View 1 (cartoon, rainbow, N blue to C red):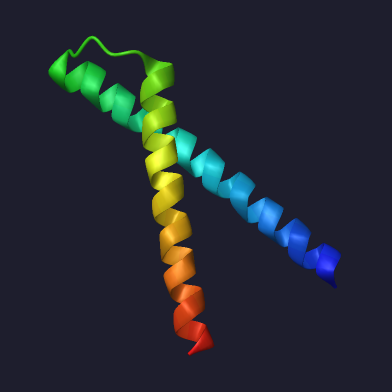
View 2: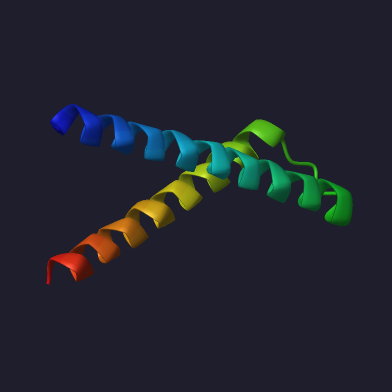
Length: 69
């Protein structure tokens, strides 16, 4: 049972990371095409990916604490 929970958690983190990378790439594309800003794709994807990932973890923590109480 614990292995299943661990694998589920790993899968969730993997999916969150993929979505974060996709959102970071989308932000990069919008900034490059719309504003012609000289930014680099990799740092933009990493920064927005980390911010999105932290947001998801925070929301998940809130949801878990609400379910516990």
